[in-house]
Length: 518
Image 1 (spheres, one colour):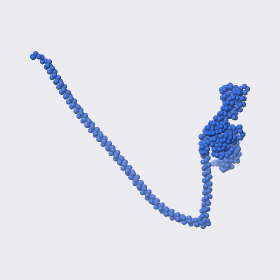
Image 2 (cartoon, rainbow, N blue to C red):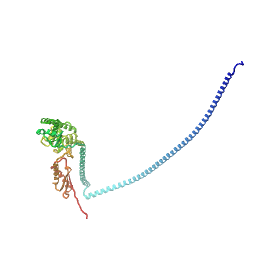
Image 3 (cartoon, rainbow, N blue to C red):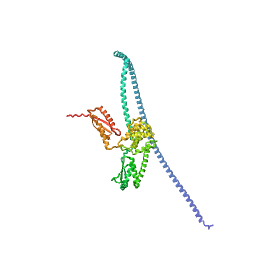
Image 4 (cartoon, rainbow, N blue to C red):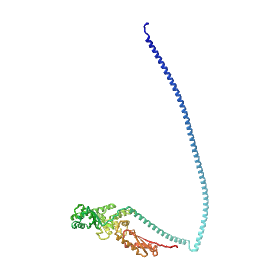
């Protein structure tokens, strides 16, 4: 037993003891550290709580201060509003007091006025009684002086008043007639002006020549032909003169018949385009051109009737209407003139409440006689009326045609409107033209007519012959004679002179007295 070795067991025990001491020491150390941490955490928590309490107290103080400031502001605002309300109430009270005082004063004034009126009524009653007595006494005195009874005096007075009323009534009627005439003239001018403004057609001035362009100057020789046979054939078939001169690449067709000139132009253009120019070919092209022109005439008539809105025209009237496209009057295209007259008459009829369709139809057909007046004897007015009657036109349309130049007195409003529209279309500037020689002769004759009257010193035709101004000798012609002289000159111009539209006659009487101060 003594031999047993106890060294390992001791070492193990020592190790176990050391381990236990280590564990115990670690436990004690951890416990100490934990207690230290808890202590420091408690101290930190206390500090945080203290700081939070301090901050809460500071914020509480700030909130209290802000609340006190807001309460102060609200108190100030409430006091201000109260003051304003008190001031407003005081103002209202003052105004009410003023109104009460004003009403009291007015009541006092009304009471005084009522008292005054009552006194005046009494005075008026007394005066009325006195006046009645005076009137009775004066009537008795007048009867005694005049030797007439009251009934006789009343009849005499009524007769005098009746005569005065008749005179005043005549004056009033005369003034009313003058005003009505002025108003009618003003209204007529307005209607005509509106009609002219609404109607804007082109002014077409026709000439007696047409120019055909050539591709080159060699074509002139081919048109003339051998020994001039081509040009003679073309002139014979168309009735138009061909003028071939030094004008480069152009041939002039001259003729007074626009239809023949148009046929010649179309035929010549076809021959130039075809290139084969000989008598047989010329005859063929002229026939084609005639058919083409006839088709153009029909289309022009249909287009004119459609444009104006005139329906159910007889086909022959449409054809005659289309012929007016190639007819001129003083240089004015008659178809354009007829369209313009239809437009103007229709617009004026609409303004006056008349028959618009009748006015348009009559305006379109008023110059239909000019389509054949070179073939039929007689004035175009009579020819046109006969054509309208032949093709069953309305009697009112026929009357408008007959009356548009004054051959008959207009009996309907539409006839007057067609007459006025015809004059407007013919007389407007640039619509028609005349030769310089005819124009100068007309102006000279106009001045000569004016100067043929006694007392006329000098006359001047102005406004292209649409106005004449006449200077009279003031010592020989007074104002009344000047007015009479203007009417007499206008009447003589109507009798002796032919002119489109109207001529304004102005008589001027001027007296000048000159003295010199020395």
